[in-house]
Image (tube, rainbow, N blue to C red; front, side, top):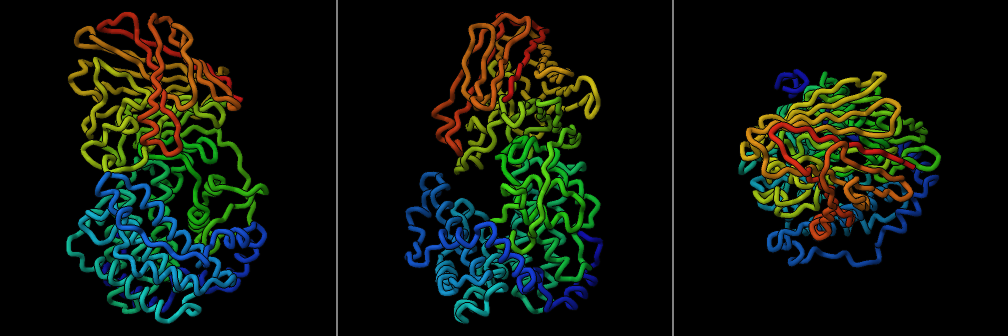
Length: 589
């Protein structure tokens, strides 16, 4: 069991801890006074008043909106409404905790959510367990609200909320009609569901034996979650899902530590510090990351960074949060207010290279240039078929990009997943060989080796990835070498192909999200506007360039309307053994 405790030891610790709180900050007046001062100084009081709408009738989720996912596969509209209600409720709770009033409005919001037919997101309604990500988080946050300001809310509302937390979530955790797959899963689902459910139980369950069952089951289940990280701490789901899944693990770890007086200490596991450092390994600049797989670049939540630093000295994580103009953490939620102080954070550019050999991801830097390279396999969590793919930044501007995650729909997590250009190798900087894209599945893989990391001179990443394509491609070998030469603001790419017979078709593809234009046969210019520009050209290889702007496909699945552009080079001749070389010359702003 996680933490090396026996069942009997956990039962004894929990029995002695009943009556403690996993969130003692909620009742600590010094914490509340500090939070109130921070909220006043940073304009949160005004922001909360502007965002809260107590004079507006609380809307219901219309049946037709809830059923959009079932009928059309669209999950965006309903989730936006549901997350909006959750945000309104937690903002009202923060305002009440700070002494701003709004208790009657909070009564109404809680009662309205208790009246909802389900707490599950429409996209998760068909899952075998009554507990999924959203219902677990609601149970935790409603329990948190009661612990924070319950004595100021209506008794009837509080009783109803506790009853619904038990009926919809806690009772199913201990006695599920079907054992949910996430309990033995290794993805973010495991940590979010276990973390949120156990925190809710620690806040509302008072019977020692029953509470011990929650703790024991969660500890056993979370061992599976931690096994999903590579030995070097890497997260194949990408930094966004690290923030989500591991963020809830950290909240639970801190809660269990406080509840048990440090006797259950999840953060002491030898793997944890390596996992904590993963965001640093894939960070380019605050808000800019190597967004492989279903990832979207973003900032770390202050609560996660601060709680990690309770247990491990990883202060660099604080610099990955949003900061105010004067360098303080930009607190935004009740969670943040509980743990953040008025510290100022010094952000310095991390010039180090990072090689996560077990994850098969590398970040190499040379002056203003940052290169991110990926190998691994095509059966990873939130997988994209992207073996050999790479991204290039000049400063904080991304000139060769990974498109990241599409807007999720029913297709995204179905057998049709790789019809999406975001998930297919078609949307990544990898060759199309004999008309073949890469194949999905763990057996389709590549290896990564790196030379010169954190040393003077040239830096190279080499990926062997012929087996990512399957036998139809006719490849015996495919070696990609990407080099950062010293003293140059450029990236050199060399692809060596060995075929069983001369190929009938071959295209080299590079992906950009910025406007581009082909310059005859000499190359492609990538225009970053105020962020600078770059020129991509083939070296000593006759052939032609074309730009494919995937306007309609991007519009259908893009989060922000960005268009994916495929920069396609077709060599003039094809041979059984051949090498194609390219150089990307950067002029960052």
